[in-house]
Amino acid sequence: MPTFANFNVKTTIDCKQGAVRAVRYNVDGTYCLSCGSDKKIKLWNPGSGLLLKTYGGHADEVTDAAGSCESSYIVSASLDKSIIYWDVSTGTPVRRLRGHAGGVRCVCFNEDSSVAISGGRDNAVMCWDIRTRRLDPVQVMKEARDCITTVLTNENKIYAASLDGCVRTYDIRVGELTCDKVGEPITYLGQTRDEQCLVAGCQDSVVRLLDCETGGLLSEYKGHRGDDYHIECGILANDAHIVSGSSDGDALIWDLLEGKVLQRIRISDNGGVVHSLATHPKRQELLFARRRDMYVFSADLQIEVEQL
Image (cartoon, rainbow, N blue to C red; front, side, top):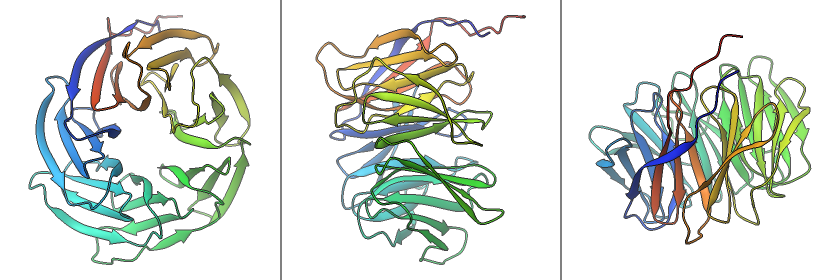
């Protein structure tokens, strides 16, 4: 079993972009992105807190962003109903994609970054071929009955979480849709590195661990407060610990198997909702967003896997 070391704050960054709506690592965790209510995306070095680039082009708040597999492109989603595909080094928009009838809530790349997948307030999931000049989506999935809050993908599946309380799995190989009903509005969805489980943050202040194959409920994690906020959750790089933000200025880390709280991280004594977070793809490191600031937390020592 991996041992657990407490997380401490390493860097606090005032993003200077209004309220920070989302924080995300790039594919290898070298850089991170912050999405702001000032309609901009910023690229940072999370270790030094250095601002590397600012991307401006959206006409409303930026809600989500993702880096491509080789870190040379970014795709971003906004309440202006568009998705922008950016060149990282020049900072210019390569393509602007419009198709959603409402604000776009979430976006991700497929494994080789040839397709962008978006989810919106119009209850639709859209797939965009960004290697070609085609400006309309190659596929539109409209099965959800409420806002799409997260889209995830792996080699052959697309997962979409919605406020209608369902996780929909689209199997691309066989063209099948599976709908797993959680029963509570889902505000965020994450996947374990081994692709066996999904972790769903729900509006009833419970984080649920779901089996990818069966859709069955494996475990529940409690202790944080969700209220009516879209609180994000995640799984640390070792697949052994679950993390979630909270509306009372804290973040919680649980043991995945036992479900007990291992650490309650006090992000701020001034309150403020800790709504967005990102887990480092390799290290025991976390990003949190609260109000205007982004926080980088890391574990005291490198996690060592004990020999059983």
